[in-house]
Length: 113
Image: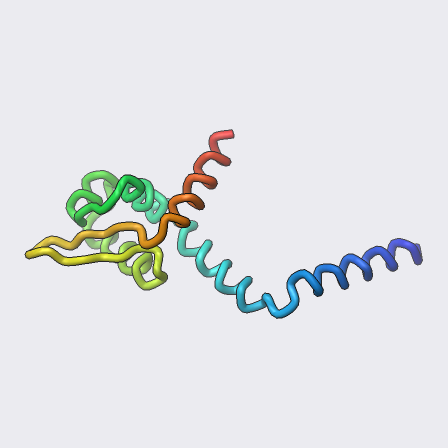
């Protein structure tokens, strides 16, 4: 039993060395993944994969009602996942960073396997 305790302590020490001062990064990563973990928000990201869309187009593509869609868009924008711009009376949204698309693609392909 002493050998097992020794291995556990070694593993714990190695993990502490690897992730020293990373607690804040874990929290940020967890919050970022949490915002992506809603089916409606994944639908929105899927619709935006190919580029910028108006709110009206997103409503049509996703089947999400405008009031609910606006709430999800606002959350995604506040967390830095999306950016928006206005042109006349239209609001356009797009994914803020191509790394988000890469992450989305990884998630999508893992589920298909």
